[in-house]
Length: 213
Image (cartoon, rainbow, N blue to C red; front, top):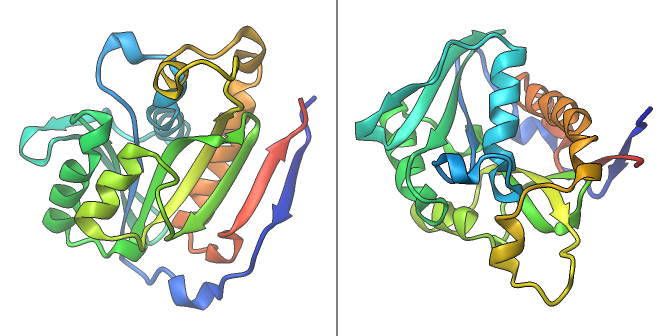
């Protein structure tokens, strides 16, 4: 049975990011649209968001062509939560996010982006606010359109194996059999961290959670 552990990396004053009553919070999953990308490492953001939606009984996602995204909305606690899956290519994710946050008037501090991270090993999830994209083109697109002040849930998909494989090819591969056996555990932990964010427990931002494989 997997053991989940918390490993704080740094402290952030949670009061700076407290969610007030009746706020709108956006949770974005990054990925590429198309059956050929389902189950790939690069689409773990989509998969995690889908799992969160099912676990919390969100309504089915609806395509909003003007917002360039699939959207599902539900009230959790005192906040309206909008789940977003961009219909743009991964590298153009910022176009959709910019449209959605403008339409719903969502402040950057109320935006959580869930995405894959090649520099983090599989089995670990790290949260952070701001900073560079670490080479993730989807995240860079969002930074280019709305700035870097949003929160990120970085789901590890590394290390790249074999090392000589092109990174772009590696992230588009399906998860290995061993990795697939732990995917549900990863989803459960990602759900927990997303829930923490929605309910205002921002003091946990800046930590690493991992399970022992």
